[in-house]
Image 1: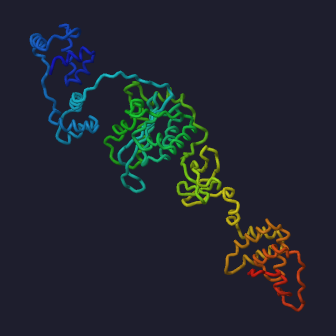
Image 2: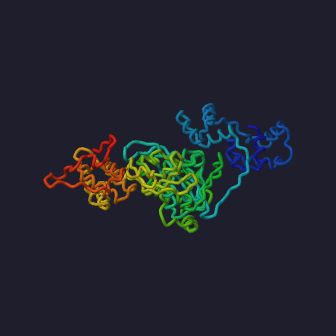
Image 3: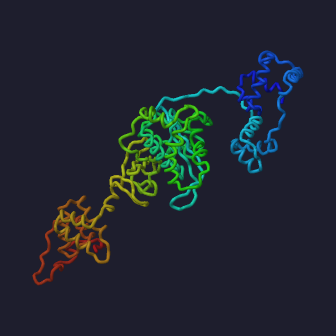
Length: 508
């Protein structure tokens, strides 16, 4: 090893340990070289040529010449370089080397990697937050867990929310990255902390849901609704800057995987979620944090908890927003059920906000158009009658009992005609009854009643007969006299006396 490398690090002000890690030396050896260099005024000014340095070293410190040892990782150089290009971490590199017979330490691998990828010195500024000011969220892959319903292993994600000041955290494992899951995890985390921070910092690259927060307007609307309900501000990280949320970057999914999940046999997700909350309040919460030098749980209980904003009085309804087009039938399809909206907006895109108990529909400018109860089963159709075209409504609201009641209000003749039609043993006459009753809208109830009376007198209580009587204004004509010897309900006169000239129109 070139003595100038050692002197370079020492002249830059690097510590013994930093220099040792960079050069693969024990820090005590570095300290002896520092004392030697200091004694010969080699820490400042211009260095002599390499040959003079080497002669001075051999004469004054011959037994401590820089070691010329070869790293135990050197035989695996090609593999290490390949893994580094793939972005594999040092700990994982060591595991891959162990699979190929490597028996050296992590420190040896670390030193070898640092020689291959020396780190330049870059100034950093540590940002600390006040109690209750901020929480940071991490959401990443956590391996596989058992689905208690199927008994099979499924891919699992870990949601981690860490309070920036105390470092106390909440962890939850989930099977999917749906918007509803993302929102539910936020609700559960805030309930766990029994309060709300001023803002929530989120990543933007690791999972589909986090990326969607920035790219998908539907996810944006859903998350905004959650933030408004609880009163926190959403603070996205800049792209490719995980250091901006370092409190959860290393203490989040990464820490959960290394500590809680490390070496743990596969278990059900239900059991894992029970165990991880205990872990949050014990192993993670009671550890001495490397930065704060205090226990996260203690900092939270003694200071930060009282600085969190109180939870809202009502539980969050987990509202999911989607932009949907109103169909020609005046319904939008939301999560396999159908909800009506005003027919004048057919073909337009509407915002649909689905909560646990209600579904609300808004126009493109977020003006509320309708509120429905949440459908209790797929395929349900929930309707507000005033959303439908007026001319289409009567046929949808027909009811046999209501038709009888409406006919009775018009008069006994109308009620009798309706009863005769509804008792047809072969045909369903309910639509015909509906059309009959709607004749009062045009001709009035009294004229309809008179027309029905006339039709009954001629034993022809058909819809077309009654409509023709009204059109020709015959309902006011005197009823025919019925001969005493004639059987009931027989014509005393010809059909022409009932309707006049029919013009080829049939009335049955």
